[in-house]
Length: 290
Image (tube, rainbow, N blue to C red; front, side, top):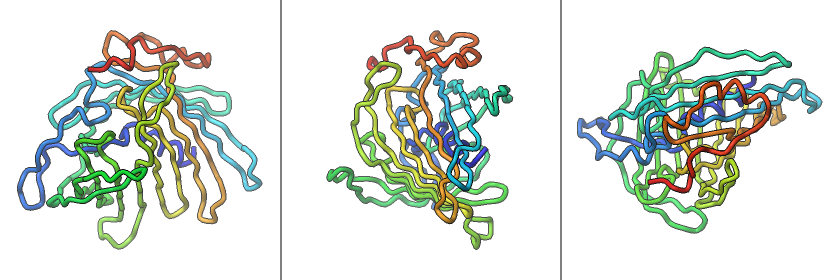
């Protein structure tokens, strides 16, 4: 499977709305807390869930489709904790007509989008602004540094506590631990605010986001619609991967096939039944959110 599909899954979990809550700055001072309700999963109750289907095509050197795969993923919110959310992910994959279920995974995600297990520090935030559709939005510019076993990442986040989706711009550079070799660069930009989008026969308010992920062997460009009215935020994605010669090597789309905002909305066996291609309406009206 090409890189484009894992990128879509990562963006799905991250929800495009990473925010910071109660972390410690490099100078030892704790930053003001940003409420969990600004996180695409943190504002919902335990048991809320979303199910999506990702269709991925790999192209040969002549531009013809050489392989097509389908990934159905159900993400369930287990708990909202003081420093992040715990998510359970169920996945089923179909490749070359064969279907198999991957092992269920659990992820702990901080409110600014990081996975648990990475050291994190933040420098003193600065003030600034960004312009979206001619509108100037004042922001806090957060400078984060995180490290894992084999890499470290420096990230700039433009955060507004007043304008959804709150994180309006993000730049991340990942290098090896020495800092000498670049492994990837990712840019996330909110391009349009308050756009109507149909999800499961319901019109929701959404925001259009562009993500560009550059790595040594190519570039993945993703366009997404995200909505605070749906658990996890992401309601649509379209992604393309090109190699260093800018040749299209793979492309993917993501669509929502079901969701609910509480434990009662879940049904056993939902993931196993989605192969029929049918989708169903959410049990709860996404427009009636506290």
